[in-house]
Image (cartoon, rainbow, N blue to C red):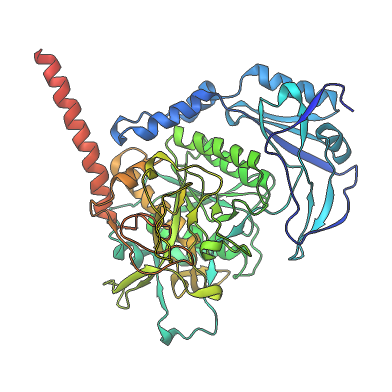
Length: 545
């Protein structure tokens, strides 16, 4: 046992999943690796906040090398973690100052003693067995202010894919429509550019399943993106053969993003479905100096307050999102497919990571354009329990971000209270499986919906924008909200997701609306050009003076 005084790590408390039962104690000899995330220097948040307040042409993003060198963890903090490891017979398997992380390995017995927590096997209500813990982890008192989170002791699955299949019983003649991503790009006026996405890398985070290159070759033909699988924490490209399982998510993400930006490179980061795996995958993409992604698409998540994440884990994710903003990486995230409840048995909830104020949360609509050329209607996606509804609402965890100051969330009870937390989503596009995306999975061609499809669609659009603008958009939420009323979005004013209703302007179903691609690009270019002219005029005046 440690001789130094220990304290609970703030925000590290865990509770079992609702309905989970203990199956037995974890073997003391079971090997475990944990990620100890250290607090980033305050200067990183300051840099990120400065970037967010600047127009695009003034933004000076950090290179990934500069981020690691100038904003990484200091040697003194790392040395203290190494000393802690020695005291408890743990090995230091990896140190990554740029990612503010130190990885420790040891047996379950040693880890339990080091962090003063009990490890048991649990079985969830849906039959999944996982290693878990309850209560907080404990650390030496002099380390409590240095550590954000400890991930890896608890391996409960933290996220689900946000895709929704159309029921086989739904007759196509009953109003269902399938769209290819290219057809949607035209309906949404995405800029028609040569070699769309050229020079860009789109990162996709996957927590299960896999892709087959033969399917991609068939789907894209001779003009598809180069797709690379990246292993994180021994996660791998592992197709299950079940097109309705996680393979459907993986293929949906790749095919939608790749069809919109076929000249891009796509890097798919495969990781285990745990808080450590999820965080490590995002960090790997953000800090990848080989592939240098400019946009990250995430179609996995779960309720921010549903038991999958502790507050300390959410803070660790927030640091990874700060790092993304610092190097000019945009993150698009599915907002959820279970309406305002987010699948919880009672109350209103929002999905994470979509609820993070540092990502772009993507909501869903129902799009009716039978001829694939003219939009007849577009409303909030809500087909009831089986066919799903867009996630959206108000965070109970994250405060109202600056770019949402003054907004209200219209409700179906005809009230519209001011936001009390981060509002979700930010933007939207078609997600209803009855007006779904035509994809090819495990040799089968069929439609898929869900906000899972919107995140890669928006990631493809960002890749095109980055190509056209000549620099990455990075954290672009402030720009999206600044473009409200400019004609850059088609406002969705019909429908609801349960508690929340569509309304003029921003709402908690479809955000600022559906992007009109060329108009949004023009708004972004116009602001940049106006700033450039003002800057040039100022320089000219200075010379005359």
